[in-house]
Length: 285
Image (cartoon, rainbow, N blue to C red; front, side):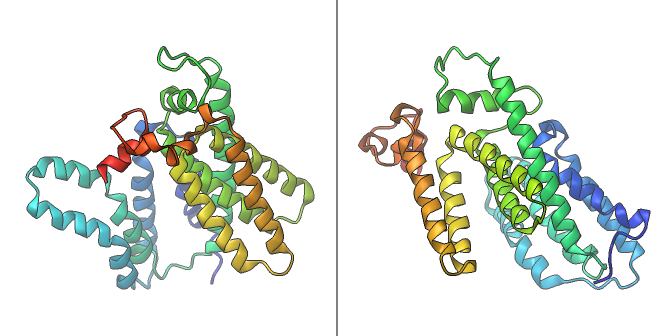
């Protein structure tokens, strides 16, 4: 593919990529401007490109959930509420539109795009974790008197400007860890690789402190099978040892601060307890 970044207007393509990489640090009220900026950038490159061929098959496949939502409006008893939900789901169609309709034949070097996004996103999560860790020291809650997982989750939600739902923060951290693994594998400089590994350990610590069970389980289920398939020989033994260490760390966390015990606690599946997320999900199902 032709290199994308030979002139200033080509470099413009990196602007929305870098902004999306900084997503964890962007205040909640400003997040909606990111997909709009991406759309405007994609439209700009669409008209700069002489070959305006589109790629419909992946567009419809990746947009299918949005069209299912749209179809469900026909049987909705509250169309106005449904339209508000559709508004929050616009990214499900916006991203495929940008990449498969506007940018299909544009000469993009996606290796450069990927590397830049990974570096920015990983760094943004480390900075977010450091800011959150610092600000939590000043957080007080009349409901949560001890610095346990519940206290940390509420604090993460309530932090001014960068406050976010702990589940979303856990997703950011999990994706940052995946970026970290990729960066560490590609980096040749030992000092840079060491800094990335230290950043990953820092993010892992905060991820375990937040204790979003589903996200942690999904992260483990995603990373280790990929490693087992890609690595050969004795490397697989190290991966299994790593998995064992992670599980040991989770189990060693005191029960009163370990939300994973909800999964094996008999009371989680009996009477409704709104303070137990496993219990709530079980009864909804």
